[in-house]
Image 1 (spheres, rainbow, N blue to C red):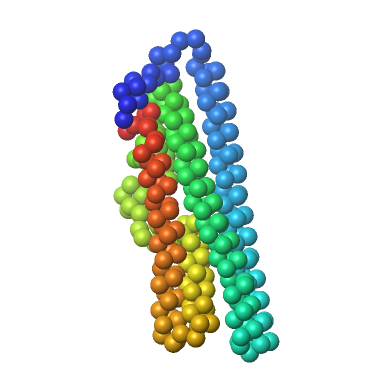
Image 2 (image 1 turned 180 degrees about the vertical axis):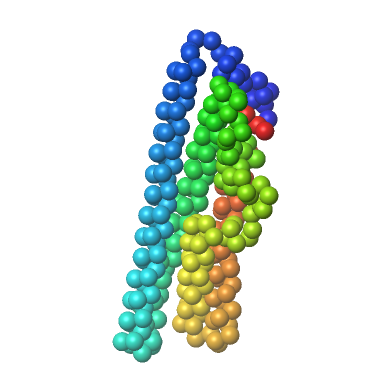
Length: 229
């Protein structure tokens, strides 16, 4: 953390503008960040819904073609054309949702800074704020989890139940099914086809997880908080 980070002067130490004007400017920026965050969530839900629609349509199409062809070679050919498209859409959707989470975190950092500024103007209101007041990792975690997660913590279920994680899970399953189908088309034994599908699905899931961890690690290394806890 740089030395300048720790020497950021408070609002009350900066002459030239009244507290009322400062509060109005801060509130305007707060609403701007809130609107941008709302747009980010709208895009997230829209993209996730589009992906689920594609998956649902693909499943229905595969069922209809399977019933019409007796799940023979024609069905395999159709599935080998359709599933790569679904897999590609899933990979791109997961990447965008993961990046949207990072963008939202940046917006939360800005909102935490604004709350910090509010309390510089009115420190007697500190007890009424339940979200984070600092722009470091602890402050971000407090804003995400509010009051009760300070005591209960986050469970594995909560970590895996986010929208990007669910999209990634469906994408990994799609990759596994495609891997098993390719192995079956090559006339591999059933056990080998199933094993190939499992390995492919796990590989897709691992690749998505590693991408997310790498992106967050890059952001963490580059970011320096201005108002650490």
